[in-house]
Amino acid sequence: MQSLALGVATLIGGLPKALWPARKRAASVAQWQNRLAELDGGAPETYFEERRALCAYPPHRTDRGTRIGGIIAAAIGLALIALSFRP
Image 1 (spheres, helix red, strand yellow):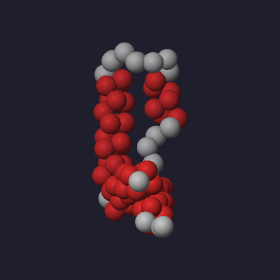
Image 2 (tube, helix red, strand yellow):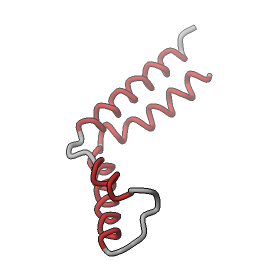
Image 3 (cartoon, one colour):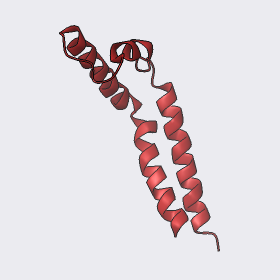
């Protein structure tokens, strides 16, 4: 039963990343650009060297990594579901 529940949760979490990775990346890029604009406008940093961290680690430029992660998660979810029905 535990394998079934974990498999369903993993499958549900992995499918959107595998099928629509651009949504997640677009939201991440928008948040990153908004925060940089706020800092340029004079907003205080919420933690030490926030601007440096934002510039050093920008969002991914492609959807490939997110899609691969989603496919792997979906495959693991399907495997767990299949294993839960074994006698």
